[in-house]
Image (cartoon, rainbow, N blue to C red; front, side, top):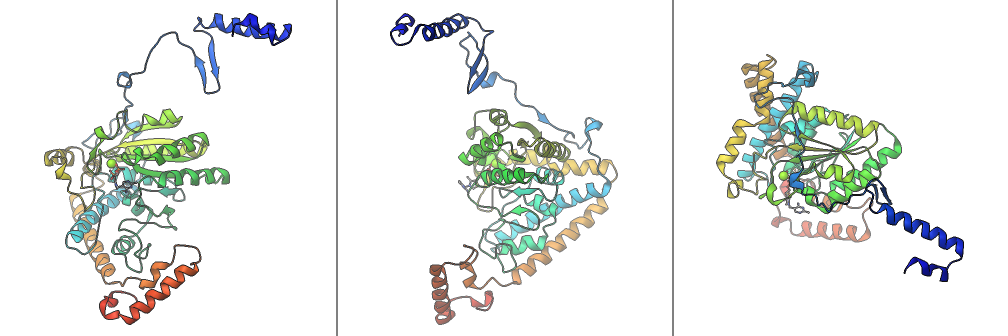
Length: 430
Ligand SMILES: Cc1ncc(C[n+]2csc(CCOP(=O)(O)OP(=O)(O)O)c2C)c(N)n1
Ligand SMILES: [Mg+2]
């Protein structure tokens, strides 16, 4: 509709107003200095027909404090830990690596059904755990056992959960390594990938409303970051300005899927600014870099009440789980190279040796002590009975429904009648 025809529909005053806007826009359409003010975009116009080719953008750099030999590059970034705290971190890494090895073997011997190793990712786990307040709430994926150990979860608790016995936090109702601890503010792990991420966003929103000065952290792999849940959570957290740290462990693989088949962009970090989030990429094999980044992220999350994304670059040295043989999709040479050249534990160990905080003798003692603790706890867990079978009906609802109680009763009667067909000795008495 041309403007002069407006007089047919509007009076003179209205027509002149509409005309003034029309001509203003017409003239400004050729001027790049006129700013756009759409509801969804306020900024500059451009007369260039220009697409963004992401490969032409500079990559987000990776923050590090120590080089691969454990030497601090810029001393002003060296965190001020006392020797006891440094040793606590190393002890946790050592304990976890021994635990990984022994549990892996236990699964191979058929003593447990399943296990997931943390090998190669201990700096990302311990460094981030050390930077949090013990009251901060954690929503993990499954490869963050070090975070829980650092908080004080014991090897006995790990073993009881893995063996699924009646002392286990899940009473045998969860897969091994799906730990949880109310006391340690660690929400029980769920198998379906990425479900923890929107839950964390919701919890962080509650924290914001309570103004409790705490934050929530959610861990996830770069594979889980492809799930819709991850985008939903990031958008929610950014829009509602919640104190949440998104901690992505980018370990190069999602089972057999390498990162080059997982995404085309600049990793997971590139998504942060797109959602309007403060973002950092960090060397996940550098304990100090992870610690500094997480500590600063926590400060931003709590003080500025806004989410922060950390992408920790690392390498999964072990198989995905005991159900996987990673040499089917990556070469042994590749694994060996990372094991030798960029192993987070070796890096931290070198740092401690250089500073004279750790000696070879202390290490041998630590190795022996940790092995002893793990074997003792494992034996105890193995000897502890499973819950009574009727337990499986509980903890589903707050109060069991009539149908559940009926099924429980039927199972009880069945087991009493046919007990000779079941290994009842392995279970607590009915
Ligand atoms: C919704 C969903 N899809 C698929 C799986 C099967 N699965 C379990 S772990 C995993 C890979 C996840 O990779 P990543 O998030 O990178 O974590 P990583 O194992 O490398 O630590 C897949 C596909 C699952 N558990 N849940
Ligand atoms: Mg991964």
